[in-house]
Image (cartoon, rainbow, N blue to C red):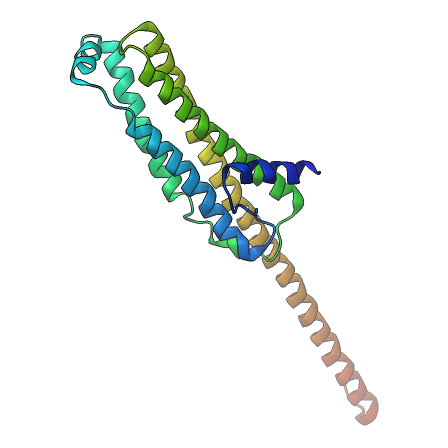
Length: 207
């Protein structure tokens, strides 16, 4: 099994129905499946980020712990919203006739990274829920969660920028190729006109 096929299979083990981006008609659905899966995992995990009144008082008594809790929850909100809105600007990618193998490999790598990082976030939330709020173990797990969310946020940027950039490069390349074809057609037309003028001069004289 090739490396690409192995990655696609690993993603499909998390997301039934995922078929990748090689076939144009499957790209939009595969992208939607990835985003829905990641969004669902994150939303379920975020719902567990709650404190009982007693736990909330314990955290509020420690300004550093309270700041870490609030900033992590805000980052959680940001990441969930961003993965939901990620498809904006992807239309050029969906419409490409062909995507080269190197680009496919990179996108699959990024899809797998998103899926696995979302799973890591969910696992950390479960560990935080099992720890005593405000304790050293709780704080360490919360710091790890904040770091994982930041990495996920960066991964969303990387994926969005790569897909949009690849589609833009392909469109620009197609535009340049079309310009070359049009220039060649114009050059051929000019040569044909000159040949016709030369024939007329030979037949009728004159300049």
